[in-house]
Image 1: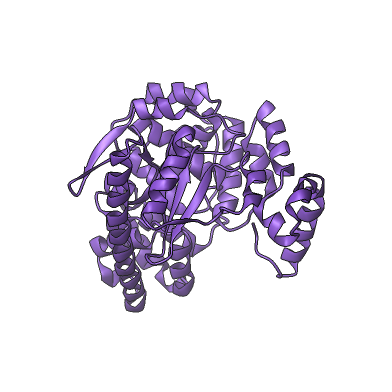
Image 2: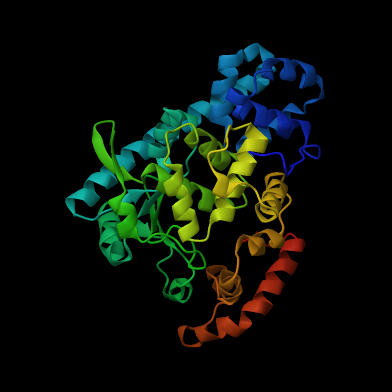
Length: 384
């Protein structure tokens, strides 16, 4: 990636800088020396919290083990090892569930694509224990949504957002949540990858380019590599790359043989060049990922550079509404503002209305938004 634009790391804490170096260890040849030089100034409790917040503790533990555990204080290594072990058990549980649900969807002749989960960990990291995952995400065509939901219900899941009030928000959501009460596993059943304010390929296109993998003896379906790049970059961008785990995914994916010409074609078709460029800027600057000169169409512009700077604020825990607005361009910006005015499920939780009066959520939305922000400042409600 060219040097025309710079992303400064000087404002980052020593703990975050060290975390970035360990996660991107393959691109940091002087890492052991860096740890020794900075160890005395590191707040190790804060470092552990960052590994948990960014969901990268299994990768950190694995990389530290390769470097030499003596480089970090013993209590830090012990905490990382315990977190790594707990995550391994969680991923084994999710793997078994992913296989079972995949078999049932195939039996019902419902095309599906696994969005992330244990398969992504195996695919990018070569080991399910090296990536965290709290639930399973499955994408189906919108016309198969009800049939896929029936498969999940037959498997013991119930719809967590089945309240009739959610009908108001379906135009802006892109998935339904299902929870298994005994297994304590959540599945998000998607009919879109992103909100309707974003353009994206139709399911049939993604299915035509799918890859089928043998996962521990069971065939499961997911994206082709170029569509995986599109999926990972749009997901990370929507969330401000606030978890380093998502950028680590891009870093690992960049090591694969990808058809970059096709990637550029996809990004241009859905007006997402700025999203692809932002992801490459961030991985290049934060992890040292080698992007080379293969992507002239995705070389950084002032716009993508600005998005990358705003994302770094998110990564450091400093969120701004300016970021979400900056993500969308042209007519999509108008769709975004309309999307913001539409009622949300937590508006209905804050101010319940009878079914016959739920149309009032639309004009009440700005007032409920202001009230929620005031309550948040007082520490009386959570950020939605």
